[in-house]
Amino acid sequence: MFSTATRTALPRTATRAFSASARANAETLVFLETKGDSLVPSAANAITAAKKVGGKVTGLIIGKDEASVKPAVDRAKKMGLDALLVRTSPALEHALAEPTAPVFAELVKKGGYTHFAAGHSALGKNLFPRVAGLLEVQQISDVMSIQDENTFTRPVYAGNAISTVKSTDSIKLFTVRASTWEPAQEGDKEAEVDVKEAENVGPAQAEWVSEELVKSERPDLATAPTVVSGGRGVKSKEAFDETIIPLADALGAAIGASRAAVDSGYADNSLQVGQTGKVIAPNLYVAVGISGAIQHLAGMKDSKTIVAINKDADAPIFQVADVGLVADLFEAVPELVKKVEEAKK
Ligand code: FAD
Image (cartoon, rainbow, N blue to C red; front, top):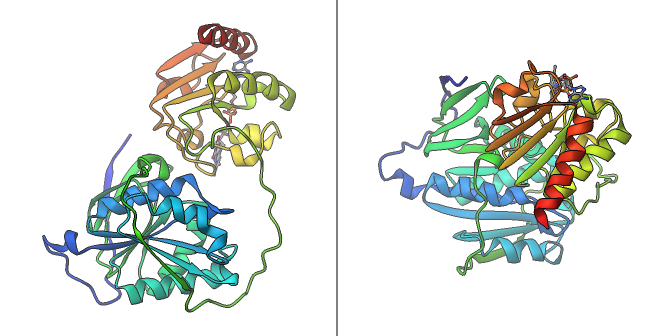
């Protein structure tokens, strides 16, 4: 069910009036998140959203020094940007919010940008509210579409309604839902790269200790074209590994899970799909032993084709499924794996 609500933000700072020609005069800065020395996949989606605003689009990459982000810069400069800023400081190595947010606020103010965008990732969600606070503007979160340079749509009530936000702030600060924007592609045109030491680095109020990354050769869940997810119906971690993983292998898919499967220890919590997990829209989503609670649907209902396997014919997942199989997953999934493998021969 989709309905539309309109919320108008109060003007806080000096308001720049947008006219018909404003779109061409818009200047968007887009933060391009990196992991290690590479761009994260959702950075390419954020570029597409930034381009939708119209006008000039400048990318922003931060890092400890120039060498530490070189592969990301080499890729980003070919992604159709008008310019690319690289700002470095040892304090920015892990993009902790306290040192980084004042750097962003300063760049936006000094550069005269009308829009500042980023992916709606854990990092975007941590950094952007602070930047919004420093700039005294509102943040518009999880943007799904941009109607004009002032008007954005975003999901509310776990994606059951779409809110249209008209902002009158002088700077529109927004994060974008990666799955609703096609990723920008690399082309021949190269943006000019401006590398400088970061200005206005904030205080080191938090210390980066360590991180444990799940290493996997599998496609990234957030951007994979095919996802196989398992739910509580799979019943154990062993059964998850013996049913969901072979099906994902056969289909070349990323693995996802419901929150109940994650809470039961069948899958890592980085694989959770839903309102409090990842929001994805693959071409094919296969839900195995998942009932289809509203919080799970919030993370996958925009998938192009949804296949559900569940032994309960009344399970709500069948209401959103394009193809439904009422069957015991322990019989149906091995049979499906066999058929997929045979079809590949
Ligand atoms: P169940 O609801 O227990 O469903 C299991 C299904 O497996 C059943 O439909 C059953 O018929 C089927 N089944 C059992 N055995 C078999 C078999 N042998 N063969 C075939 N089918 C079988 N959930 C999320 O997934 N993601 C979220 O991000 C999320 N966020 C939440 C946020 C909040 C604030 C709250 C309150 C809840 C959230 N939840 C989330 C939890 C959500 O409400 C559900 O509890 C959860 O999605 C249920 O997971 P499930 O479908 O795997 O389990």
